[in-house]
Image (tube, rainbow, N blue to C red; front, side, top):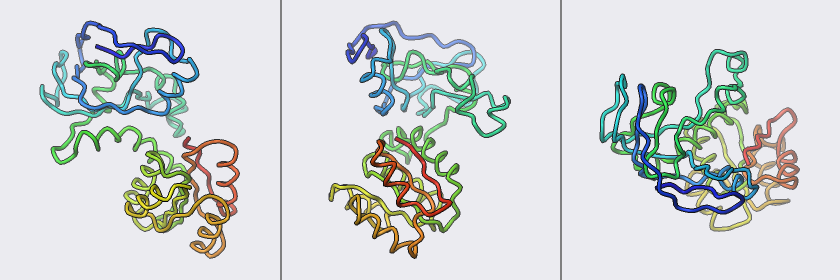
Length: 260
C-alpha cells in the first residue's frame, strides 16, 4: 500500500506489489515517516506527477536483504536519507554536495509514504544507519532534517561561543535550537516567535531567551550581543518580512541562513 499522487493536490491509497531487493539493496517495512515541507510544497504546487510517492524522512525495519549486503540483518531498525552525492565531482570536492547531479537521484523506491520501501545500493552502502535501542522511532525520524539543519549550522561558520537567532519556533525552528545546542554547547540562542506557548517550549529546550518579532526581538538581540547583533540568524519562516527581520538582527559581517 502506498499514498500515490494523482496530480495537483490529490492523493489516494493505492495497492502496489512490494519491491524485491537486488544486489546491495535493503527492503524496509515502514515504522514512522515524517511529512516534510517539501512534500507539502510539491502537493500545493502540483509539482508531484501522477503516480509519484512522496516521503523521505523515515524509520524502517529491515525485512529482506539483497545479495552482498553486510552489516544489516532482518529486524534491524534503520534510518536512511534518500539522496547520496558522488563525493568525487568538482561540486562535491568544493563542499557543494547538494548541487551534485548524482545527488538528485531518489534512492528510496517508491518513496517513504509506503508500507515497504526499497533502499537502493548507494544509500545502503553509504548512508543507512542502525538505530540504537535508546533512540525512539519518533526521535529518529528527525535524523534527516536534523542533518540538513547541521549542514546549515556548519555553513554559517559559527564559533563555539557565538550568538545565534532562530526565527520561528515551529518544528524546524525548535530543531535548529536543539542542533545548535548540541553542536555548539557554548553558543547563545535566541528564538523569535509570536506565539507565547512556542516561546515557552523553546526556553524549556534551551533557548537563552525568546522574543516576539519586531522591536522586542531587536531589543533582546542587542542586549545579548552588546549591541552588535547576532553572528548568525536562521530563518525557518520564509518570506520577505522574515528575511528583512533576519538582516536587521544580524551583525555586520554576520550570516543569514534561509532554511524555509
